[in-house]
Amino acid sequence: MRIAVNATFLESDNTEVFRFIQECFKRIAVLYPNSEFFFIGTELSENLPNVKPLALRPPSKISLRRKFWYNRTLPNALKKQQIDLIIQADKTCSLKTDIPQLLLISYLPLKLNWQDKKIFQRSLEKATRIIVPSSYLQKKLSEKYAVSEENMTVIHPGACEVQLADHEKHNVKQQYTGGKEYFLYAGHSLSLTGYTNLLKAFSLFKTRQKSNMPLLILTKTRADMKVPEESIKTYKYRDEIKLVIGLSETETNAIMAAAYAFVYPSFYENSGIQVIQAMKCGAPVIVSSLEVLQEICGDAALYMSPESPEDISERMMLLYKDERSRSTLIRRGLKRVESYNWNQIAKDLWLAILHAAKS
Image (cartoon, rainbow, N blue to C red; front, side):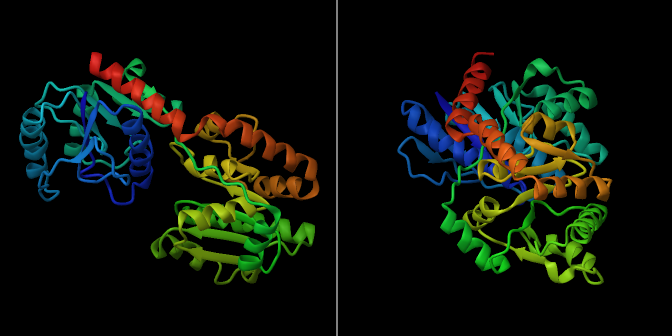
């Protein structure tokens, strides 16, 4: 089989889909050496003999030129290379090809102009099969765009397994908190309300428990850090807040593995990748009671309302006062994410590819 992977217009900040492509195809290409894989707009991190670049000069993101690229340039290149199936990684299908298309959707677009919404709707209808990271997103796409749930396959995100020895956890704590245990938030930037409620919850925890435990907030970029920086300027416990920016994946995972607990008061979520990674690192998790996070975590999390600082703080205090509950959550979390490993996910994606190719 000859398979193309198109990531030409994949948003630069959509690291979730990029990671999914990289982790899955470096495994699939090894498992199926008789198949050939052609990458458009990106390259595979592994140098494998059956993986090749397909050089197509992308136009600017001007709508008409982009439309021409998808409906003329891309189909012509696929036909020339005798491609059997193409994986579209940026929510858009070519409307002018009969080649089966597997469409990757990592989130529900909320703010589309009428033209982009029309293209997205037609792409969903054109796709031979759609891959989504959660049953929650599957349901929402079906409700909003009238897409059959039977035409979608749920493949949860994977995560890297990270287990630190006690002395390694000690070293992480020494580096970031002077040896103290700490609560952790890491992920995309929360809204002002989200950070405000997290800080209020931390204040309640500090006041009631008289603990010296700090709160670490990790973000990927300086732009993501603007809201928490503003939020703590007049905050009573600002000296107990540690802001960390732009760490590598390895460093972030080490901080997760050493955390006393991972606190995730998200108001909106599609896949729960940060929570999956935290559980994979062996951190007990306190998460919003969103439908998608309940799907991901099951009984391996403490749930709270992100709108209620009181509710968040109560969950933080419960773990602080009850080591047995904390140990139970860690054990359940590690068990829960056993299936969220890249080897299994790559196999699930390959089955979806075969299903689409036969359609």
